[in-house]
Image 1 (cartoon, one colour):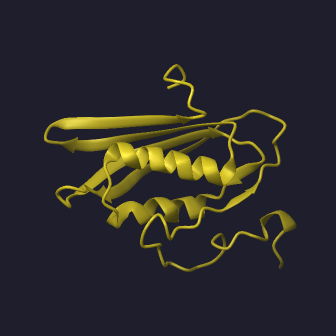
Image 2 (image 1 turned 135 degrees about the vertical axis):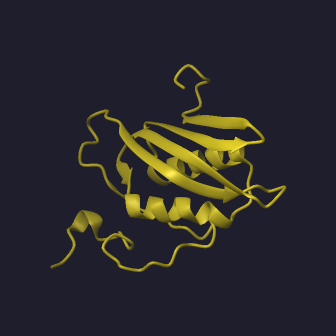
Length: 143
């Protein structure tokens, strides 16, 4: 059975490869046409098992990520998103930079009407850090 024309360019979905990208730079974010582009609606993606590395200590950081967006002409394919997010596991970055990088990469890939990325990082030294970034950047009213 052949793939429908609107998903023919997706390379990860339906492929049984288990090779995760080694870094976010190596990851491929795939998109597909939004069949409801004439309507504003939210897509919410929850990723409770995010991990990265502290750039100072090399210790693992974990977080619960929440991504909400109103798609434009394209939607993010979730298997490629899973691989992209997993690629941070060996990447040393500050928590705030991670949330902003994810927002930039995802909004660049799918050109949403609106997107919010929120990372609730596990406590380190007794302090829980939550970072939230939005596209388009309209201040903090929407957050």
